[in-house]
Image (cartoon, rainbow, N blue to C red; front, side, top):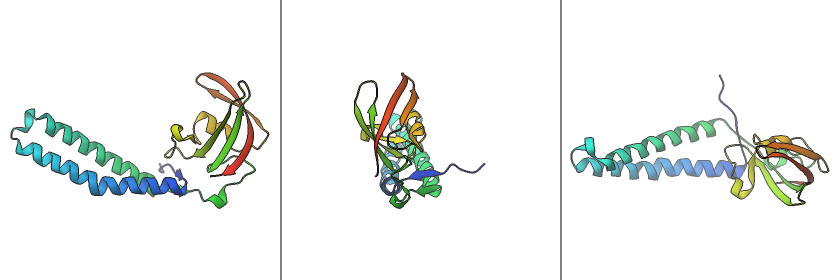
Amino acid sequence: MSEKETLLTPSGLQKLEEELEYLRTVKRKEVAERIKTAISYGDISENSEYEDAKNEQAFIEGRIITLEKMLRNARVINESEVDTHVVSVGSTIKLKDMEFGDIVEYTIVGSAEADPIENKISNESPVGHALLGRAIGDIVDVNVPAGMIQYEILDIKKI
């Protein structure tokens, strides 16, 4: 089975590369020092500091492996690939909620970059998936856990 492609914007790629570098150079050393210090306390069988440090080490190593895999399978969405006529990964879309009249703006990104707080939604999320390939003026029905939401696409622009 081939590994899943990771869609990233240029800024998303930079963020992942920076996180990987930080984990490799800073966090690994910090955790190794914590383990060394905990071992110096003596009996590690009942040493919660040692257990905690070992758990953190396992988490960091797992995250490093995940980031390496994501970067190995990354496909960077260049701004020139983003079409402002239809919604795609890399589009920033202005939407009108047809029920309440609220105007919202989302940027469609790959799942590795999704951050709802920054209004970056995944192309695999219900809203992101429903918007892909749609154009300005389209009315889009989105089935979300809370029910059906209807949006009108007001504008599409590049990131």
